Length: 554
Image (tube, rainbow, N blue to C red; front, side, top):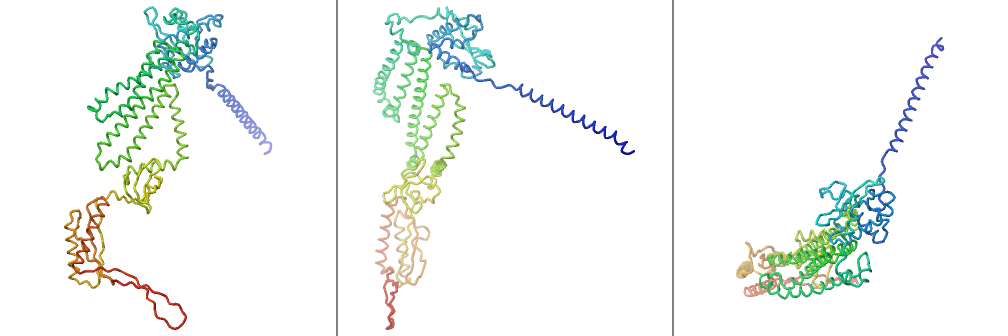
C-alpha cells in the first residue's frame, strides 16, 4: 500500500524537475540569444578614411597633392558633388577640382597651415560645428567665402569642400587673372612648372633669397659701424662683440620677414607655399631661440660681474651648468613649437618621450646618479671651482664640476677625474673655506730646564705672539701640558689671521725663528730624540748578538 501511494508522488516530483529543467533550458537559450544579438549590435569603430579627409588641413593638403600629380579624378573626391546630377559627377568633378586648385594656387593669402588640424574643426570661428572656412577673397567688391563641411560618408566623418562652395567654383575661373609680368616673359618660363609653380617664380624667389643674404650682411655691418660707438658710450655692458652676436639672428629674422612679404607679390603654388612656410617657420623659430640663448649669455655675464668677489667662485660652478640647462630648455621648446606648427600632435610625442625617457632613465641610472651628484655638490657648496681640498686621502684643486664628473688637479700636477656620485659621498675637507689657520707647534724642553726658565720661555712666547698683528693668541696661547721621561712639553695654541696658506707659511717661519732666538737667549735647549745601537755583552756561546734601539734625549 505504501509503495502504491508513493508512485503518484514520485510522478509529480519527476514532472516538477522536468519543468524546471525545461524552464532553465529556455532561459539559457534566451540569454544566449540576447548575448548574441547584443554582440551583433555592438557598434564597431569606423575604419580610417583611405583618402585622409579626417581634418580640414589633411583634406585640403591631400587634395592639392592629388592635383599636383594630375590625378583630378581622385581630387574630385575631396569635393561634395551631391549638388550635381549623378551622371555629371564623373565628368564635371575633375574639372571643378582643377579649377579650384588653380584658384588656390593664385591666391597669395591662402595657406594650408591656417586650416584646423583637428577632427572637430575650428570651434572658435563662430560657425556651425560641421563648417570651417577654406578661403576668403573679394569678387566684384564683395567678400566671398569658401567653406569645408564635415559629412557622414559610409559611416566615416570626412571633411569635403561644401556643396555651396563647389557651386561657386565656376565663378572663380573668371577671377583668375594672369600676372602682368607673365605677358612680358618668354612663354617657356611661364609654361614650365614644378609643383604647379612656373619656372620664372622659382628663379625670382631664388634671386630674392640670394639678394637678401647679401644685402642683410652689408646692412648688418653698416649698423654695427654706427651702433658700436653708441653702445660703448651708453650701453657699456653691450659691447661690440655682443652686438655682433645679436646681429646674426636679427639679420636672419629680418631676411625671413622680407622674403615672406615677397611671397605675396610673387605667389608660388599653394603646395609650394606650404613647403616654404614650413621652412620659414623652422628658420624663424630657431632664429628666435638663438637670440634668446645670446640674451641668456648676456644676462649671465652681467650677473657674474655684479657678484661679490668672494662669491664669484660660485658662478664658475653654477653659472655654466645653469646656462646649459636654460639653453637646452629653449631648444626643446623650439622643437615642440616647430612640430606643432607642422601639424604634429605634440601630446602624443610627449607621451612617447615620457615612456622613452623612463626606459632611458632605467638604462642610465649611473649617469643620472652622477648628474644629481653634481647638482648636490653645487647646491650644498661643499667645494667650488678653484677650492683646495682633501678628498679620499688626496689633496688638490678643483678645476671643473661637470654634469658627470669632477676634475681635480693634484699637487703632483696630475688630473684626477671622479664621478660625481662618488665625489659627493666622500668626506671633503675644504681648505679654501678657512677664515684663519691654526698655529700649533709643540716645544720639547730639555730635562735640565728649571721651572724659572720654563716660566720665562712661556712669557717670551706669549710676548712674541702678542706682538704679531696677524696672530690671534686666544685666551691661553702657551700651555705647560706634560712632563715625560725625556722632556717638558709646552704647547702653543694660536691662530694666524689669514686664509692664504703661503702667507701663513711666512708668518709661521718668522714666529718659529723668534722663538728659537728667545730660547737661545734664555739658555734653554730643546730635547731632540736620537737612537743608538747598544750591543749587550753575552757569554762565550755562539748565540748571535741582537742590537737594541735605545732612545737618548740630548
